[in-house]
Image: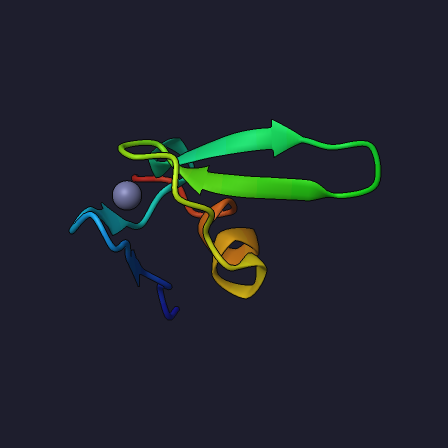
Length: 54
Ligand SMILES: [Zn+2]
């Protein structure tokens, strides 16, 4: 199983759901880095949001 990771501009490595901060908008979900609040591209965020440490 391949794991998606995303390197944020602040240097944080986003790998699991808790590394993201969910922002509920009316029309669609947006995700941000939990460290700095920079928006994370959707194609990464959607995958990361399904990843949990086990
Ligand atoms: Zn960040």
